[in-house]
Image 1 (cartoon, rainbow, N blue to C red):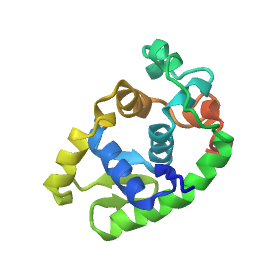
Image 2 (spheres, one colour):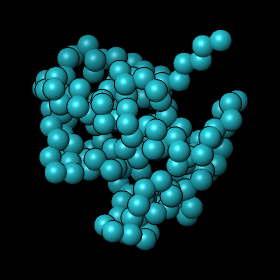
Image 3 (cartoon, helix red, strand yellow):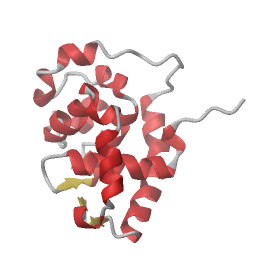
Image 4 (cartoon, helix red, strand yellow):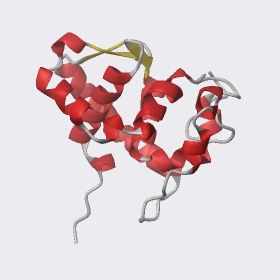
Length: 164
């Protein structure tokens, strides 16, 4: 039996990254924050494991705690995040080569004028893009502090933060 999961699909990762970048308030985002947002885009139920929730997410904590766990067993979040980073690197390279994003030292910027209108329409029509979980990831989580012992890297336990 073949089981598909979008986490292992580089093309789906390209779509997710474009969708995230077009939905945030800023035109640029740090690469580390983009990785985290993409991870929680795929696994929104793991938002419940962020302890304590960053201030921007506190307003949505009641919704976060009600997120339903998937029927399959989710492996270690750290392992999932590490495996996903390899696909994210490929997706970023692909989007850069296609001229859809621009990558700086640690920033990624969507070149919205280069994104096909059809892709933007597809993103807007996507059911998940209109969900509260997507809103939490793009509008609340993206405003969280990333670095330091109280940052999102430390609270999520997914990234090293001591050397920031």
